[in-house]
Length: 240
Length: 218
Ligand SMILES: Nc1ncnc2c1ncn2[C@@H]1O[C@H](COP(=O)(O)OP(=O)(O)O)[C@@H](O)[C@H]1O
Ligand SMILES: [Mg+2]
Image (cartoon, rainbow over all chains, first blue to last red; front, side, top):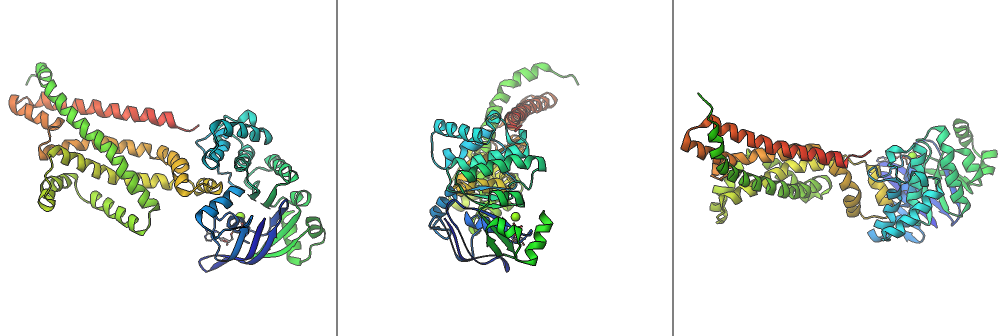
């Protein structure tokens, strides 16, 4: 579903993603970890072409991120994104945030969009808050609305960039639970996170990055129980 | 001297005619100035090299010259250069639109710039084109952000109409001067003219404050 083919990304002469081979199959939950600045966000942002790759190719559901603007929009429709900072539209209520994509992107009627949005808000446990504005919601609630908003355009895969890092510890669980539910429903996911128990329980792959390179890529429990490198071992002691 | 209240009443119809012209110029300037301001503001913030350069030159030229000189140029010099004759009222309207458009452009550029990148990316990430993000996500937020400064600018537009006295447009200030030339009651006439400007501008300011409150986010 996602195929990195010798993909590279630099900002000026600062190489952020070194030639990367990686493929994520349908239904997989790939958890990406690594020190700050190792290129995790950049990797996710290349998948939905928020960053333009410099070399190699990157296919999402068979479409290249190097394709036409219409191809890129198609990729973005299929790859929902959840940001660390939620990025909800502050001028819209929770319900309107979730209805926005279906109306503007999928050209659904307002009625259809509202029904679907209410179902999604129900799913993330926020139906009663549907008429609240983002500023009237807690961080955890905002992030759950953001997940519902991304799901509303019916993506085939979801990208999560540190979705709980901006949250107080006691609010992280509610977001993790929504993500876990998604995973059990078979959603293909790439998740950048420092939540190791999520990696262990939900992840089907664990990818360790450093300096723009994929250093380890394997089964989470196996990697975590016997770290294959000194570097990875040290990193784990830092986050746990 | 004694203040002759009856002068206020006898001058009133003439001054109201002047006010109509003032409002015509001001409202045209407001509407046209917003169009010019949006186009130039978008070019400043998102334009390619050429449109961005053009917008910069436009804003710099207008902000770098007095409005009196601008209207003189459009009314007296342009006909000689381009061979088109325009009436004084048209010259006034064109000048106010071009002038307020340049000030609006800076306000609008700043308002567009204030919308967080992350919110724009949230729109792009769901598959919207950039023009759609601009129209449906950036514009509503930038509009709110621009209101206080645009309010000031609107008030300036109303006040600036009085300088068109220099090309003989029969707006409020000009009418006041004409009435005074007949009856020599300058204290009464200029008090009345000032009061009319004050009331009109206060009404605009109040309307803007109500609009600001209406669109304020929780
Ligand atoms: N827009 C950008 N311009 C320049 N450098 C960037 C940009 N975005 C990220 N970088 C740099 O790329 C590197 C990797 O960043 P990032 O992908 O955000 O890392 P991570 O998410 O793993 O912390 C960092 O050194 C960062 O400074
Ligand atoms: Mg990051």
